[in-house]
Length: 581
Image (spheres, rainbow, N blue to C red):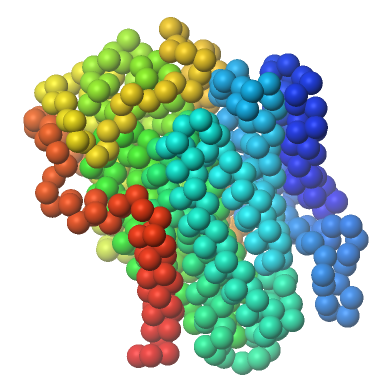
């Protein structure tokens, strides 16, 4: 079974290579079909590997196995976490390709294979990052998915805003990559190893961690936190989502950002969790502090947005903060809860971006105020948008509620309050949009000429304004929400997730009265906040008290680079706090 692991990465790579070579010679329907078949086949393979993930399979690609304990080959590890995340990547890739069926103009001209080839390349990078057991290979796959993501974000090259968003995305993520590479270099200089388990074993044999090891952790984690869009490394995410095509946003928010959180967990678990690594208390402090700040800031900015893609992007930042808090607890049950939360969130958030894409292509706008009452005829899309908002807020029995409830029980009262407030506020923002756009509820918003978050006058991503919504663009969000619902209702799935992260059976994710009640409280709070927002007249300009937050997001890359440097320093101060105090 281990010999099948490389095919999860090689399949999409070969599919992308085929489309690059022959895409110009094939009609659009053929290139889309090739990409869909490759992605679906890889999905079936990853599901098979997930069901056979115990005992853990390990494959040295090309037969380059370690000699005398030293390894230079590419190692792939088929554990439950890696194969599960690869399965999520593949499923979302299939959803994106189906949603995008004959969606774009052919850019660049007469090359219909360009977009599906980039999507397959993106899939290969993300699957490789999920499965690799080697730190340097993780960096390579990290860069592969980054390059594909930059190109997909700036796919509409004739639009200067798209190019600027992709440039910001590329610069900040490249800085993160440089930090990660420097951290890997320090670890290699200390241990002479690149395999994660091998590095961890060498560090454990050299005694307690010194400044070099802690510095390596800070640098590697900084790069991964840029990909995860944790505060203050998050500035690229709203800019990228505002200009990226809707199907690309489904992948960025649905799974790529979460890969950064997964990377932090994996590197800590296999490299730094032993006696020679960074003390658990310091790691937990770093992740819980950064996660809490990220969650609160993301939720506040989410509430302030009227540009729907930016609103959903800040919602992703807020939930990433919650994921980091769950991982930072460093307990198997909370990590298993985060895993379910990530999968449930992926379904709900991708469905929301799919519905937003329908609004863009039907009305040429993603501005909440401009769309007021214009989508009353899209009843099914309105229902989907509302259901996704409730799932985001934590409505049982969605998978988001099961994962959130599990982490809340592991985090205590303070953690429960944080999760409830953040999920309620982000859910409320989306419910407010659903009520205004699809039902025309509340006072009609005043037009604001200087609105910072305005999303009007956008170009449709289809060949023109849609007179009727194509079936794939509706079927995909329906399937995604059904999957998110099934995740929470599937008997025994929580126990399997708990076992995959090494937790005891009695602490595996499962429904309890407390988790159901906190989920219902979150939804009630979200609905209450949305109702209060609809009863008030919409301010012409953003609230004055949010001015400092808005100024932080200046749109200038130089400012974002300065925040990146400050973030690395902050992470270093938190990581070294145990030694300094």
